Length: 205
Image (cartoon, rainbow, N blue to C red; front, top):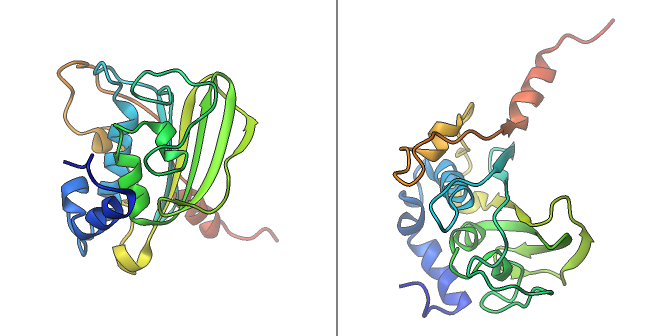
């Protein structure tokens, strides 16, 4: 079980056994895509089995953001102010039962966690799972939810590995859920495609 592990032990366990969290091991060209797929699955599925609303943005080959409308603190406890527990960062507010974001952070060189609770936003940058500074408040775009950005470690994933291109929602979700049989749809913005399109456009004379 993951629960007895201390934060340092958890990070070490993820990096030694990524296949236990993301289906494939270090050295697999599919690892970046599987990390994204697993984070999407976690963000999409509410505790009752229904589908939430999410959005995905792929900024670079090893950088992606997943936004979710899930309420912070998956255990259902209401708090006026986030109180760090296990990781000592805003990863705790995402939900101590939701270890997928923390596992993705363990494979990242930089993680940006944004959560909004009761209309108040909190933002914190991490080096992996470790805070690089205090959390900061901002005006939340929604009443509750989260936005998580991961810069996967290129030295861990490999220099030639990348998130797959032209992904569709069904590829990230997989098989239809029994509890919610309707196929989920959500936006996937791959900024690499936009950059490539701009590079191909002829310069104006």
